[in-house]
Image (cartoon, rainbow, N blue to C red; front, side, top):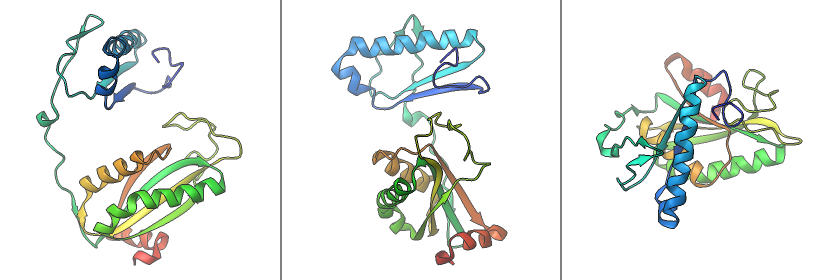
Length: 215
């Protein structure tokens, strides 16, 4: 990673590696788990030599990591960080969640159904919602063979699709975004990138053109 040969590009400012549920590996094989972190620590130092910052965030319930590879491990609890402030929204705003997938036409339709199934219980609490499947534009990377966010290579016969779900109702935007992300990743849907766009004020008409059923 420090040499940009995997997981990063030379024009990026740096790399953040986030590991959730690290306790699962600690419980199974603690020496291996700490060895993995040691590898990351050494690669972070190497990355710094190349002028490419690397940060590794590890989620664990324990506080016994101490030193990894001779490097002190900085620790903080989730409760030490304030939650995101509320972002209430109402019928005057349409929230669009967009997901990019490399897929064939049939795969895109199946992914849209799976995406709607994963998010429907959450969006039902908000109000109305609508799903839309489109090919991504050239500007969004339609011709790229490797995705700019996930770095995944396009498969044979695949195009870059944007599957969007827009919702109109009432809720808290910051909470809704987190719940949507967790629902989609929890189903293992292999999206390349997620976006969240609010349409309000003069831009509400643009949303109605894309999602007339929400008008």
